[in-house]
Amino acid sequence: MYSVGRLVQLTLVKKIYEWSKSTSGLKFIPKWNWLAVFTMGNSSGHNNTMSIPPGKGPHQVGCTDLMVGHTVHGTFLRLYYPCQASEHPQLPDWVPCREYFNGLADFMKMNRALSERIFNYLFGNCKTPAAWNASFKQDGKYPVIIFSHGLGAFRTLYSAICVELASRGFIVASVEHRDESSSATFYFREDTEPGIKKHPSCDIAKPVSDNLEEVWMYYRPLKSGENEFPLRNKQVKQRADECIRALDILFDINSGKSVENVLQCDFDLSTMENSMDLCRIAIMGHSFGGATVIECLCKDVKFKCGVALDTWMFPLDEEIFPGVKQPIFFINSEKFQWIGNIIRMKKLDSAIFPRKMITIKGTVHQSFPDFTFLTGNWIGRLMKLKGDIDPHIALDLSNKATLAFLQRHLSELFTFLGLCAP
Figure 1 (spheres, rainbow, N blue to C red):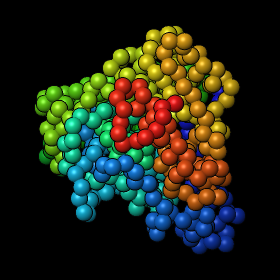
Figure 2 (figure 1 turned 30 degrees about the vertical axis):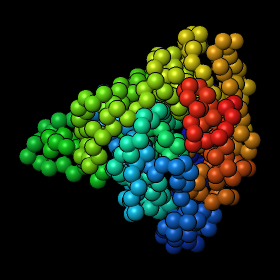
Figure 3 (figure 1 turned 90 degrees about the vertical axis):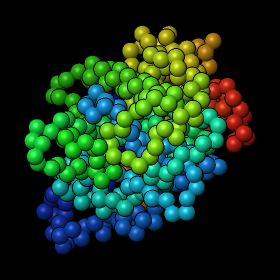
């Protein structure tokens, strides 16, 4: 079976971890000084010379976290939206807390203690380029996008894409999936020891109730000898259900219904009442999230079109393909795709319903998540986090193609971008 969806495939972090376990690797280097070896090829580190690019559209972008329902069956998402301008906005941490580093370590089969130090050193100071809990900008009705992350990712790792779309006048809900495909996520259960105060891991994710206790859920690897398809097919169905529930919540917010956020939050959801154009809704995702796009289109016609980034088709039942009657846009990387996967995409071809596919030359599977902006050139290329093309150019091409597709298939010409739709 082709190994797919690794968030950081054979990352240098893992290489250093394996190297650091050998006596020869540590023989001439004092304890922890090997971090300097890494940063010789990667200048992100503490000096923060690398960053996630901000949106290029006319709107400043805000973001907030929304959890509706405290149990594992609830909904958790990062919401990006056009916001009111402010001089010194607070930017949230790109990785919200250490448990997500632990999840990435588990996903890559690394030692947690060592990898946490590495990840924190490299990415601990990285910020998401969106104003935390900024006031919503009321300016007519915005179209909506639900975003589904890839295998081993979580809600914040595609912030460059989501921020760009929000800057162009979309409300974007990036769902954090609880199907055990995220590297890490959390929910709450009612505290069985109410007299003992629990301290949540994430400062920005404290529950409104003192009676709720944080529970973490990590990536579930395949068991020895386990057939992969039943697991992935079950997960993609759950992912689609989670995206549909997220959309239902946005419907409630838009209609003025009271939506209770389990998390302490200064953002006023009621300011978004009657702000969404719910006739213009798209579903978008990367890798496993691309498969989620197709499953969502089959399950809910409220999604008017889908954008599938470097889709992993394996989790899908081909029996659902005839039920997908909305336009689909496949944006592929040059290095990831293989003939069997493309053949499955082509099975969705239709003489009636629009299907488009492009490949961005010089890109790799990890050209879509934010990691591509946070590693140096030779390290990024060695570890397949960067392709031959500049990552800013690659994502700009993808975003412009996406916006042009949405311009056509959401049935209204947007004045913010003068592009011809593909």
